[in-house]
Each structure stands twice: as C-alpha cells, then as structure tokens.
Length: 567
Image (cartoon, rainbow, N blue to C red; front, side):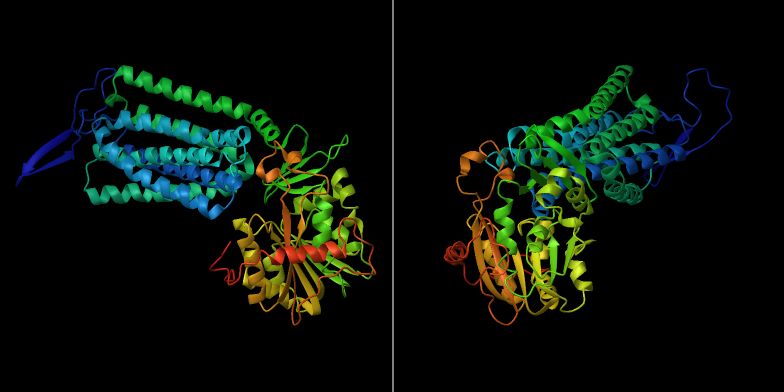
C-alpha cells in the first residue's frame, strides 16, 4: 500500500507491502494505489515494471517522431530540390511547434493518460499519411517548383507544424504519467525521459535510411511507422493506465486506434496502385521503366510505338530524345578539338556523351565515372536507351567506374587525360554543389595532360545567369582559362507550346550553358575539322552562341567552395 508521512513540512510517499487477505475478483493487485489526478496510478504491474514500460514507450515514440521528420525532409528534398533549404524549413518549424505543443499540453496534464492516448493516435494518423498526402499534391496539382509552389510548400509547413505540435505534447504528458508511477525528483525524471527520448531518436534516425527507406520506400515506411506509433501509444494507455479512463473513454480510445490502424493498413495495401497512378500523373501514361536504385529514382517514358524517350532522375527530366543531341553535341565536340586519345566523362551514365566522344577518330580510351550503376545498367540493357546511345557501352574502349566523381578525381594519377567532360546535373542541385566547387575543379585540372581541356555543363544561362557565371568564376579561381558558351535548348520548329502540360522539370530549358576551360592559355571555341560533322552544331552557330552568352556576363562573382557554396 501507499503510506503518506509528513516530516518538517514535506510529504513523503513510499511503497509498503503488507499481509492481507486475497483480493476479490476484479480488484486491483496489492501493489496498485488509488487513482485520480495527482495521485499514484492504479497499475496492473509493479511500479518498476510500469516505469520501464513507460520509458520503452518513450523510446518507440521518439523513434517514430524522428522518422516523420526525416520523411518530410527527404520527400521535400526529392520533390522540391535544394535539400539544405527544405531540411532547414522542416526542422526549424518542427522545433518551434514542439515548444508550442509542450505549452499546450499543460492543460492536459490532469487527464494525462487520455491526453497521451489521443495525441499518439492523432500523430500516428498525421505522420503516417503525410508522405502520401504530399506526394499526391505533387503529382496531381503540378510541380512544386512551378506556379503552385507556394500552396504546396504551405502544405509541407502545415504538416511540419502539426507533427511538431503533437511530438512536443508528448513529453509533459509522459512526465506526468511516469511521476504517478513512482514519484521522484524533477531532475531525475527529466534525465530518464530525455535519455529514452534521445536513444529512441538515434534508433529512428538509423532505421530510416538503413531499414525503412531501402526495404519499404518512403510511402510504405511512413505508414508502417504510423502503425507502430498507434499500437505502442494505445497499448501503453489501455494497458498500464486503463483505470485512469472511464469505460466510455477506453472504448472511444480503442475505437479511434482501430480506425487509425485500419486507415493506415488500407493505405499500405493500396500504396502500389497509388504510386502507379501518381507516377502516371507526373510522367504521363507511357511510363515504361520505374526503378529505385541505391541512389535515386530512375524513370523511363516512351521509347516505344513511336513515342520519344525521356529519362527522369529523381523526378527531373535528364534526357529527352527530342533535344538531347543538341545538348550532347554542344557539350562534347568543342572540347574534342585537339588531342583526345584519353577522355574522362564525369556523370553521363546514360551513355549519350560517350556516343559523341566515340565519333572522334583517335580516341583510345574512355573512362566513365557515374555514381549510380543502375543508370549504366539501363543504358546497356534497355532497348530504347541503348539504341539512343548507339550501344556505346559495347565498345571495348569504354570503361565504367561506379564512384563519386569527387573521390574518383582525388585518387586519379596526375595528368592522364586529354579531355575531361563534366556531364553532371545542374549546379543548383544541392547534392551536386561540391562537384561545382573550386576544390573539385582543382582536382580536375590536376588530371589534365598538358594542353588538355575540361568542359562543364553549367546550367541554363537565361534562367539562372548568376549560377552560370559563378561556375565560370570558380573555374578561373581554380587556375583555368575559360571560354563560356551556350546553345538553344529547343530544336528548330519546337516551341514552348510543345511543352504545354509538362511540369517545369519536364520542360526543355530555353538554353544550356557550358564552359570550356584549359590551363595556361584560353581554349579556342572550335570544332574538330577531322571529326564527323555534328548534326545540330556548326562553327558559326557556336561562335554566335558564345557572343550571346558573353552579353549576359555578371562580373565580380566570388568562387564557390566546399565551405562556402554559392549556388
């Protein structure tokens, strides 16, 4: 039984086991105390066991909460891009909301068990369904980078705010519950709860990238996390603290958790159909290949029945058969005007830059470094993509390495290559910022043979001139002389009307910008007279495009470095 003593104005509660007659059926066990707010809880287990179960529940709920945060960050980075900004927005809003949730939970402390049960059921539903809701908005209302971006970002902030409020409300309620099991000083209770919370956060942070994401994917992983959250929260309240609830409250909480689990379960059953429908809404009805590699989502559309092939990487159009030749000829041919026996291609796993390199006589070896071997496998095996790249990977002169371009350059010997082609994504993609840094270009300069040339895809000139000229400034800071140029994105006769209905990531850019660089003297912008003539590029066009790019110059831009990215 619980005995209360008063000594020098302080009230002490301690637990005493005494001999008594057997309790009648349905009566609380001898170690349970009287219920009611502020009083020790009626428990079906001993206090030490109850305390352990509460801390275990804290551990699981903290892991689920961190998974929700990481899920929002990952999904926002994938759908919107600019992972640094999205992570900052999601995490800062969540931390702010957690503070508000902690304040709001003070009003629920007198009904801690019921309040905690309601919070966990709501959190399981909101957090578990957040990924599907955000992806549905992205798929059916347009790209998040377009005109509807403000509304979509508001939805992201709303989910971050709601989940943060609910996570923040957990700790005060759990503090009240654990104190009712066994009263202890506030510092000790905070330390115990914080330890369980932080260790649970570690478990959730590791489970998301190494277990949930690779095994279940973003959508199913979030739904599974919500189900675990609902089961643990409901079991903790209905199992340990059920005598704190009226019979009606217990039935209501049980029904609410059953509904939440039913919703999450139905969503998990339908998630494959949902993904297919959403994918068709994003890419159109002719999705032919959709795979998730260890690095990114790869989608191929078209390439059959007369439809043009499109290659998407993480939702962004990377290759369009309508216009890719203009891009790859402009990227490769100016750099190949000179000695080109040994060529290094950074990126370009689709094999299209390799195709253009192999058109030049005198090429003895081509090394391709791409971080995603899944793209290379598709370029080898997919009939439409391998036909588009001219089966370049069947050529014995081509050697492929699956590695990060930065680390590959650090390990490469000095001066082995006559030409380095940087066929990498746009510098505005945060994950690629280091591949457009002064340090990276310093490594690229080191692997160039005397008289060698480096060409860099630097993003669209007209749409993002600051990013383009920052690339050029960074190349010069690395000790290279530069010759910037651009080429129109749309083929002759194709207009913006041809892109109607496509999201901004699916539309052909107005132009592509490139920078040709070399150590020592400025590289001349010319085409190799001894190579087959490009189909879309002429010397006159190249010269005119270089002049057009020069007219957009933004002088005085600082270089981008690893510790101070400028894009």
